[in-house]
Structures are given as structure tokens and as C-alpha cells.
Length: 388
Image (cartoon, rainbow, N blue to C red):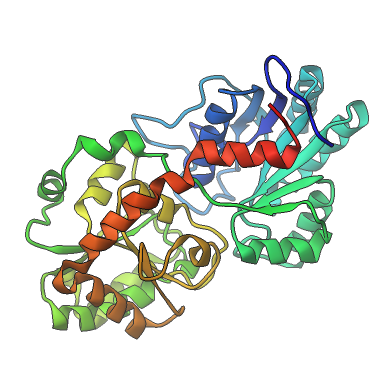
């Protein structure tokens, strides 16, 4: 249903995480809000309590950043353990008289909260629901999680996914024609790019004279770190100056990886920073690196590629999820098969040979404008049927 121009644009209600919560989805939702409100009137409802401490697999879900990526006017209402706050959130949404409700979807944990909010707003308004699906089916899923996912997403009217795999998964659930496959935008860390040079970053990290591979983000089994570690002996044989920097909080048994490092005898060429990297330090790690490795064994999307592109860095990634759509094989990175240390080593070595990665850096910089937030907002307006 087309929506014609209004003086103040659309009235939009947006639900999702923002600071003080950490992680890519909080960053995404915050950036989405900040760019939507430049064109439309947006009511942003976020959380005052996200996950119970016993349920969260990491150390804490609170962002330690001194320079937060925070929304300017978020209403922190929803407590996942307090149903009264779910009703309050629905009341605020109904009162704002929105044309559209935008909700991120990534884990079935939010199913009860979303079902209450959606059902109440549907009763009292003619609102349409736009789901932005970061994961249609979460990584560690089960029958019950898939069932809850199906129940919630069937309430949606419009859908955005960021990978062909998620599009297929979603079609299996809802069989809708209202699914739009679009990109994850870059630019979250754009204001940090020029603040520190490669040489300064390497001095800070003590990596002068090294050829640096970066593995960044939460460390979970499906992210395939073990295969990157298994690629290191071959890489070091070809060039002893190659160095792997692992920066991110472990969600799985760290000892599994440290034992593997010891077994492979690569300890002198690997460094682990087992902590969530705050925003103000992200530029240090990415500016210090030459190549970003994303050896996932399964995935639908990954904001690590967009962060690498923010900083003009090429990637070596596996042929899963949105990597197939965003990595231009042989141009902005190299794609390899999953669970294949030999291919990982070969791809990384080829980028280091004759400094080939520098040409890839130029290619990455040239395509950054393709994946902007404004382009995504244009696409959302098109999906909704809004005409300026």
C-alpha cells in the first residue's frame, strides 16, 4: 500500500537494542534509528534489561566503551523478565500512532516479548510490521526455538534479510512475497578511520615489521577459528613474519584454542586479547592489520565484513551466508570453502605475496559508497511504499 508524502515523513516505531548493550545488532539498530530520524518521526523503544545474567553466554552484555554508539533519544522501557514493561511498550507504540513498526529478529528468546507487543498494537492500530532478520534461525537452534520463530515471524507484513540463506530460511517459514534481500551497510566506525595511522596502531600493539591477520569479534565454535589456527603453520613456513591477532571475547572453551596453539607450536605468531573490544579501540586493531579473516563454518550475516570495509581492509572469508553476497571474490577479498585450513592458508598467502592485499584495499575503498546507510533507508522507504 503506497504511502504519500507527509510534512514530517512517516511515523515509525522502532524496537531493538542500543547502548548500554554491546554487539553488532545494538550498533545496527542505533545507526538505523539515527538515519531514519533524519527523514521521519521515529519512536525508538529499547531495553532497560536485556538478558538475565545466567542466560547470557559472555561475561556481560553491557558495553564497556567510553565512546558509545548510542541513540540520542531512546526510551528504555522493555525488561525481558517483566511482562508489565511489554504492555507499557505496546501502549507507547499505540499512542505514537505509527505507520510502521520495525523490529529486529535474531534469537527466539524475544518471542514472548514480541508476541505481546505485536498482538496489542495490532488490536488498537492498523500498523504494519517490518522485521529486519539478522538471523532467521539462530546458530544454536532447536525445535522449540524454530517453532517460536515461526509463530512470531508469521505476524510480519514485510521482511528484510541480509543473505540469500536467510531468504531461503524465511521462505520456508512464511512463504511470503514481501521479503527483500538487501545489504548490511558500512560506516559504523567511519569517524575513527583517520584518527590513527597503521604505523601508530602497530606501535601500540607491538606488531612493527609483521604481516598481520586479524580475527575479530565474539569467539564461538561456528566462527571457525580452529581452521585459521590450523592454517598458520603453513603460512609461517612461507613467511615467518606473518602474525595472527585474535581480538574478542570467548564464548566457548578458550582452552580448546590455546591447546591447539600449543600443539601447532605457533604461540610466537599468535596473540589473543580475550575481551570485548570497546568502540574507541576498534580503529587500533583494524588499522594495524593487513587482512581480516572470517573463516566461519556457518553464518547468515556478519558485521565484521562491514567493519573491515569501513577501514578499507580486504577479507578472506568462507562461502557462507552474506559473505557470498558482500565479498567480491578476487576484488575485495577471497572466498574459500568452509572447514578448509589449506584453502585459508593459500588465500592469505596469495594476498601477502607481492603485497597484493594493497590492490584489494584500493578496491574496498572504491566500493564503500555502495553500502551506505542512506542507501538502506532508501530501500526501506521503497519496501514500505513511501513516496517523497
